[in-house]
Image (cartoon, rainbow, N blue to C red):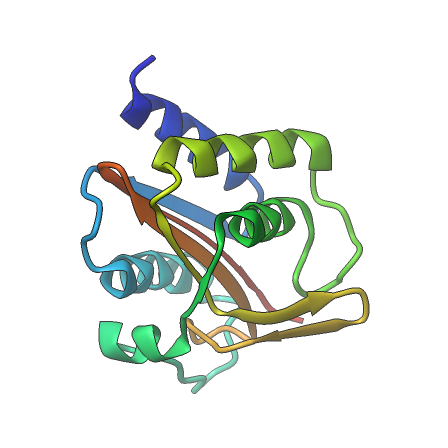
Length: 161
C-alpha cells in the first residue's frame, strides 16, 4: 500500500465516529490553518442542526492559526487517540476501541516522519479538565494536525451538549 492510501485509510478509521472528521492532503508544509479551516467548515455544515443559533467562531485561517499550539509527535499521538476514542462532551465515555485508535494514531505519526510539525487547539486534556481554543462554531471541538514528508493530516472532533 502506498503512503497516501495508508494515511487515508488510517485517518478514515480514526474519524469513523459521528462528529469526528479527518482529511489527508498530498502536500506537506501547506497551510495547516487553511486545511483545519476547510475541515472545520465541513464539520460545521454536517453538524449545523446541532449548533447553537448565532454561535460564532474562527472564520479565517489566520484566526485558526491563533488557536493552534505546536506539540511534539508523542503528544500528537495521544490527542489523535483521544479524539478518535473519547467524546469531548462526555469525557470518559468511550466511543470506540482505544487500542485500535492508538495503533492507528501512532502509525499516522510514523508515516509523517520524525521531522513532522504537529499542532492542536487543545491546551489541557486530563481527567476532569478539558480546555481548548475554538476552531469551529461548536461548543466543543478538538483538532490535531500534522505536516511532514509529503502530507498534511487533520483530525477534528466537534460536539454539542
